[in-house]
Length: 486
Image (cartoon, rainbow, N blue to C red; front, side, top):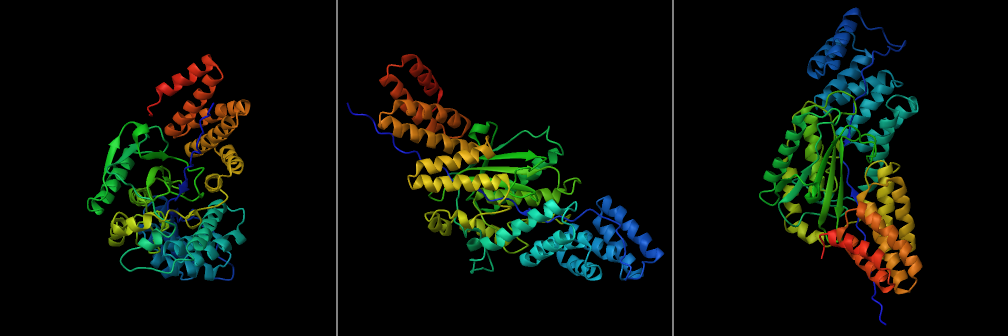
């Protein structure tokens, strides 16, 4: 009797290209004036306190005017320099904020809030190494401070970004194609791209305008593509290629300082299989999410979902690595537009066949649950490609222990269990094959691999019929009949 040979199922790569790390300003504190400096005058304090009230009311322009009044009265008023820098940051003007924040830490080197804001300022203008040094200084002064977790996450993320991009030598004036595709690319092959947006009315902090802002961001990218990209909204999640979810907590994001993140599922030939976008409804400062900030995050995340996997080094571009929660209006730049058209043009076609180098696409804090899951999953794929099933299995079991609900991990783990079952079946070790089939099926049912599930069910049914286990085979055949696969 000739036994059928079960071929190996391939695994799917899982990438989290992240969102722009949010450059956050600290909470506003009255603090104290160092004893080595002259005490601020009564007029300076009055203007300063008025500025704080404006800041609490999210009026950074009015606040900045008051802080400037305070500094006219008392030029060495440390907190006025710090909060003026913060107000300017909130207006989207980090270049003007920089000298104020540098003056604050010069006057008081132990002012932790000023170092945190200075780090965010450097981050926002692309001086990443200076940002890391400023964040390190904050952590030295206030290792258990209220902002320490976020500052630490930002610092780790930026250090990873520095390491990731150290090999980039080509920087073009008109586009950032070489930067954003440094680790490879994945793009959609067929248009329109189907977009499913999960209902969000019950999500804390959600407002209907956030949905309209997101839809406009899709339109902006669509128009910028010159007809190369188009979107279609669907109400059935199973039909969505890009899935969008609003959330009040990115607990498992790649860093503790994200305004959103995007998970993509590429294939090995430069194609995009799927993308999941998560958008925060409550900013990390705890205040109301401003429309301009939401718009910038949305444009940034959609850029990743379209295949712009890396980041631009120009702070003006939407795909710059940092997203500043400011009141400044945002729009796609000419460089954003040209880079997208190159991605879906001849340049993208030529690069797509080279695949993806995950080592050049690592983003965020490597210690987060999500990045640990990503790393284990991709290590498992590499082992699987090398036909090392037991080692791949161990990696995926570790990944699933960290996140039992990740659909790609479940699909990949189920596929490996199915492969192990097939090997046991071919060796006529039906006892072990039965164990692996029973492990594989629920994993694939929780995952997104209907084709793989169908193949596993067919193989399991074949084995059960060979063993005359008719009743069990009938149950598996019923499952198979309910699948929409050939």
